[in-house]
Image (cartoon, rainbow, N blue to C red):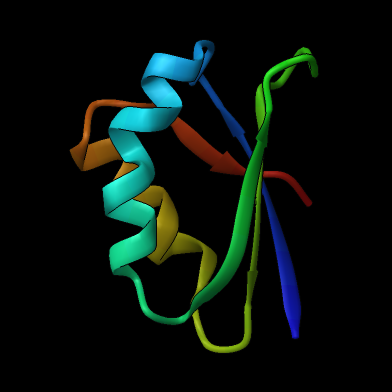
Length: 70
């Protein structure tokens, strides 16, 4: 099980809702959450098979910035 952590520009619950369907459609994501209290608006994703670039690209296509934190 891998936990991927991303810096995003998702800042509101409404924006989280707008990417919910996108993230839940990725069947390899077991769990995800946003920390909107964090200065980096962190997205954490639990997955066994997804690469960070797949998630970053999907959010960017949806109009959000998403950069893996290492």
